[in-house]
Image (cartoon, rainbow, N blue to C red):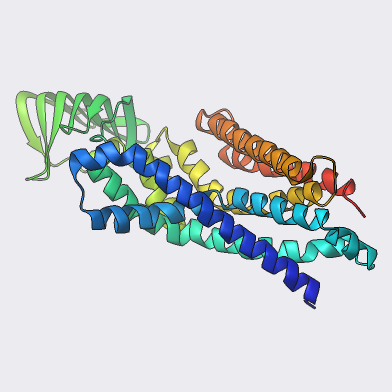
Length: 359
């Protein structure tokens, strides 16, 4: 049953959380406008698009991305104030155990984590689509795939390879396409250059060589130019890494499955995005426990010491998350382990700190 004390802590928790978000977002907007001002003046986007398409979608994205850290800051601040006003001592002195006092904290963290979880998987990706479209139009440079030696399986047994591909002119160099069945090559196409014609929806090949094998029969054809309807699109050669942020989780799962079939080298990056959508909201519980443990004890140095220690822990968490994600994208650690390991390690830290919290 929810008591008056529970409602009191929940109200303090949530009000401090949302107030901290508003204050930090105001600062973020000021810095972002100063950073984007040159792009806005150069490309002159309509003011309505800047406000509605960009900032109305950027601010929820930023707030949700760092919601666990905002939670941590809120817990540190209002709990330390309670400690220095002797409210924690009064609560424990009334016979309420420290574990029971954690209940309203966990209820509040559950509300925020559940909200963040739903936003991460379904709402934020849709708003990211609008934000990224604005950035693509007014902020980012034209997309250029700088990858080399791009290899894809576009469908079972059908493989494409290109030494380099330039998305600006939609042309690739040293291209090959082959069909393999039961371990044997039945069709092989090679061209010095391949160019996408968006009007006709066909690929134009320059200096091509085609070899078709049918049992013991073999046919070879060559030429300077050939327009052909190869069954793949320019997107097979890669998309912006950030575009996966605009995919809802069911769509992202299907996309990852397709990319695994094609042998994409970006699978780890996509899986980091996928697992992070659940891992980051879970961090709300971990950082809440750490925040209560740190701030519930009166120490010399006051609230400032609590906030300083809290910021140190939060920045350590961010650094650890970035480092572990880098290991995943480099292929040395599975994405699920890399994304969840900071939560596991900081959970152990939280449980250790709870043991030393005031009883």
